Length: 283
Image (cartoon, rainbow, N blue to C red; front, side, top):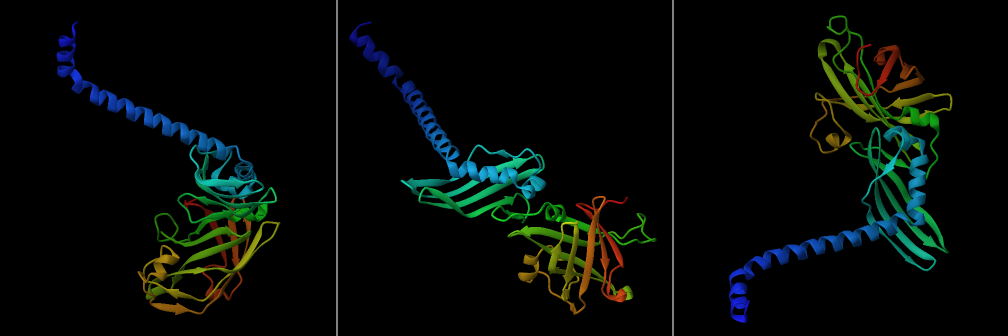
């Protein structure tokens, strides 16, 4: 092929090389970015602070209770680690998961005199408000109480033999302690049904799997509040108030929470209330 023919061939076909060349450049750029990300993730995951944080999460009984076992690490890690000699800082969000769900392990730590110290080390459970603080030791007895529990009152006129809805108790762990929320029903006979939502007080859990708490005075609502945010944003306006305090003593038995209401009988929903974990089903 002479020079004139080569020139004509190039004039006719040069346009095909532009997209091919552009695609090749994009592929090379993507491979380069992937390589940089692989190196960065590798640096983070090989660091001592990352390994220590993961080890604590995998050994924590509350995390295993929430996610199941074994607990696995995700591929992508958000955040960064900066080290300068014997000093440094770490700010990480590490995805973890187990057979029962997913979560994010949050890490804030500083390095001084070649030693890492955590200021934050907690696991946020996906799809839940629950956060597990790994800087506090949580007893195995406390872990058994965590979660959502529901009670249904017997009702002979109902096809199932129970009310269609009931009291709900939500127990969470915070700073090594147990906290909770009581979604109550106020049954007033011919005057109808009111709902309540309040944070429980004076919660105590013992190693023999017993729990006590107080349901304080609370507002009454015509519609059942979904959360404290529902109340705080005034999307559900209270229609009344009850000053009655409910005092509960309970224990675990065969996977259920059995409570005795030790307030005045007229103030208690029932003297004995059996709460089942998770979604309530008729036995």
